[in-house]
Length: 124
Image (cartoon, rainbow, N blue to C red):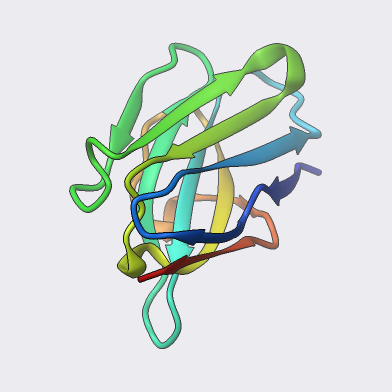
């Protein structure tokens, strides 16, 4: 079974940066993609980015495009989310998720495995 663990969340002032990590284990094939989602209090879980393990293709939600960068280190089986120019509206619990098959996916239903999340708080 695939296991995902997020880390790197914390409290940061507006305009600051954080780098989240998603350590993945348990894949038996190379065809998979990792996505990042976030859920703010009282709101639906929102897809924000994803990366294909095979070809490194990426995609971003408009709300984070130009500020967030997703990357992966295959040797460490870790995916990163570099978050720059953070805003108070970025405050949320951030989850990484994995889907079998390397298609770039943007909806919650397309992902098969989830991490527990890491909290990000951006102060104004």
